[in-house]
Length: 336
Image (cartoon, rainbow, N blue to C red):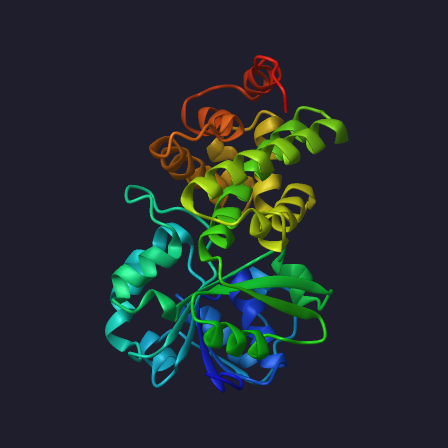
């Protein structure tokens, strides 16, 4: 497979799906953007704006939005899946009969599925019954609002089929967005799934008034536990030391635009999960769910993830943020 994708479908019109639709359109593709709600699709088509999820950004005319999944997927051989990780299976089950058999399916979701403990590429291959080489993963330090504002950014496209990866790379390459290809799907996904949990921890520390030394320690130790899990699953250390690992981790842990960091900060200031959700516009940060599935996955491989465990205890076991910080700082000393 060479050249660009021509027409692509982006399934999910949240901030990230809309931002990637803009990148595809700016790179020359025609884009069908599926929105769950018809009013969102109508707004995009009539005003060229997605006010609820990506306000203030003008969307190119090459993007056509629709609330009809069949219309979005009809005849398209490149499909970007931009629904939240825990909703991917249910959505894809409905879409699978509409997919072209040879389509490249691209996961934009970051997480580990609750219950099955599957990575998103595994969910996609299982539900759609396609060859795993047809499934690609896009992940990196990619805050949607910054990309939509055309601030320079880089990302990783991981796929077992190098031809598909290169086609996607060309189709997403713009003056402000640079994709790199990689064959390490596992490492790319583990970095993306785990970083949201560590960002919650950074936010919690900031919320209780702790500073940059603490943040640096959390990021560094967080990377260490992400690498332990990734390598146990078969990931390459170089992937987790690159854009999809440390790059994404730093961006998500540091930026006030990061939903997970902001959510953690609200918890650190004393809000409950429900209060923090309401303050965040009704959205639960991905890391709140991911900490449960990541911790279960780590346990099944006998991998120790103390930061993830502390975040899980705060989010699901009633531990206070102060107690969680004391727990982390009070661990037995040992060599790094």
